[in-house]
Length: 473
Image 1 (cartoon, rainbow, N blue to C red):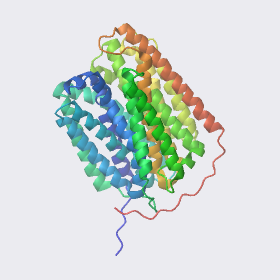
Image 2: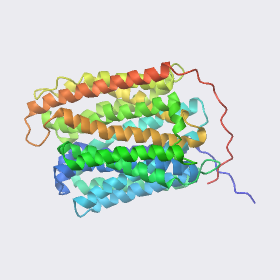
Image 3: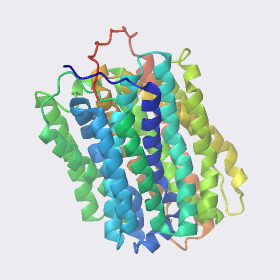
């Protein structure tokens, strides 16, 4: 007797995937508004403080594309549910960590778990929502979940640490992740490609090692770019990523089909994600440190100020579906980058006598742009790859985003100059102005690149999507 088919449950699928996406974003950003206090409580020095955020970037960038391919080939629900379990394990490990080394290991594990959630999420959503307005709306909701996590994370982390200690931050997230795991197990419907591909072990190894070495080199470079270990890590990362490209060009069934880079939509999606990481995520990840140093704001206050940006990104991502009938996803991507650049440029001129209100207009404009950007990236990540490779497309898109984030943080620190404890607020303010101009310029460059790819692209010829057999739980 054939197995009973499982209903797609589009509403439940969207709710579970969005909740998990928001959760991993909260877990990543929770330490940002109280980074110094968390590092001190975990017995970490200045370098360890850097690795609280970088460790997660290493884990997530190394495994996103691998997780996406595994999800398409072996089951998106299976990989997604494993990811939610690993988030719970990483947060429990962090809450129980006896010292800094174990806490940093929990942050790397969080990155690996986040990859297993973010990569299959768009594949699950696309499988449950057929092409059309319903899918556009669903992808906008998923994009809003990213902004929601960024809005909640710093405030949650700062308040819980202030009231209950740094271990309670991870404990609360572990419980929330356990609840999401239960919902995923009960509500999600399994889906996968009709024909699984063979394992690409050399691609997995070269990509993971290359991205890890590159991001580690960028992190270590913050304490001096001329050190041999920095040069070795950066050079090794570049060589390993070049080896990954060679492997993918020669292997019979590559994890990432390099022919996709001949498609301007895929290039726009990947490039837009990279510039989003460099110019927005990277800059905003370090902005709390600058605000605390220049304005003397507390952790909860910094989280509240940043919520102007991230909160509006939630609203604009939810409303971005109204643009779908008027603008292509690539043009929306360019528009989002442009608005982000204008908003960041408006942050110029911060000085120790400023109030947080000085930042409000720029953060609000950047927030609107960020929401449009997140929704457009989700649409492009799905539409620029074959339907049966949606998770792989999401993995490639998010890999570019998080490598860009590591580049953006390193670039922000490099141009901001002296940012160590005890640096005069006026010096920090001058450095913040330089970082603002570089981030705004990166957004403008991303806008121009995206528009160039979009305007030169030939008119697309719609192709019918293959009919997939009903999935079973």
